[in-house]
Length: 429
Ligand code: KE4
Image (cartoon, rainbow, N blue to C red; front, side, top):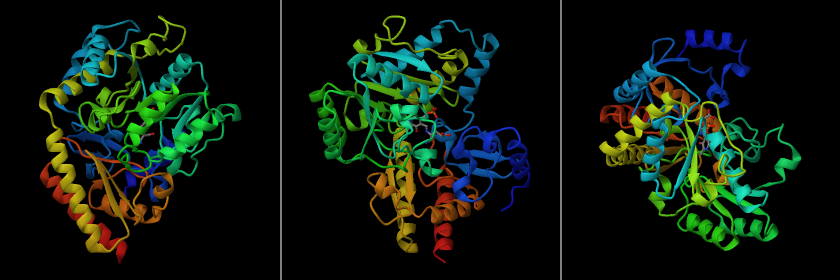
């Protein structure tokens, strides 16, 4: 299907914006067509510049668990906008959101807001380094924690999608303090801890990896990280930017029953407006300026509009509890996709945690970066285009997640399952 208005906008965008986009993975580079320029979102749907309607499973890359432009969120933003958009001064809204996050994620004793997940993860490792006096961090190949220098070494998401998991521009001296372990592989963590004993400030992990596709933690993996951190005085950081309030209201730490020292948040906490946050043990968070010496700041951190959108969203998630329905709908989608895969004989398999799903074009069970990259990204690109032509808008990368929202109806799911069946058959034939 052609998208003439989007194509024209893309040509114009490239004259003023690198690659025509403000975030690389939006450029559709790995799926072989120009990106769609979107103009409207409502509930489970988005409309592009050519007026075509799609069932949306990107949801702004996770924030829109309640769907686009939820009336309560819009009303909260409108109300706040009439009062003020920004002060750069404390407001009660920030206290209310911090109190609600602490209630939902009890491991968080103190919380600080930022304007993105990247700022949250950057700040969390700075706190861990300030707290331990140690320099090195352990991350996991294929995990993505935003574009902070320390993380762009064997990173996931767009870095992996676009073939630059380790980015130029990150200095050798920075890179040497980032150690990469293998996801779901505790011996690989133990080996790094032994080789760098007494030098490791933090282990940062996506408790469900969502940036090399969706890769669930194996039984015992998260508990094993907790034990290593307790034994070695290493700060355990759960990067819940994607999983926070997504896999369940209390995030992956509630789902798996493992308590980190620090948690980073983003996406849903802002209800679609720019909010990140990091928090955890009081003794660590009180190192932050102006209480302690670890500096961290942000002009728009705790911005009233964003706080209003985040509060409206989290209050609805708490009061309406959409999680059982999200589980039912996501399970229906995953099971139907698996049936379609089996019938089509396509080499693919489906993973899911809560309302985060991924269809990997590989026959291997995907447990880490090495198995994730066995996926046939050309087959994924073909699948993406076939689904788009049938009105289904997926993340334009094999190494991202598909998100189900409270706004997706059973009819939407049936249309998606039928599109999936036809798309898989087209690829096979
Ligand atoms: P932001 O700086 O993009 O708000 O958050 C960075 C981040 C941190 N941690 C995790 C687990 C994340 O998933 C992200 C951002 N996720 C990607 C999509 N997988 C954002 C999409 C994009 O880069 O445009």
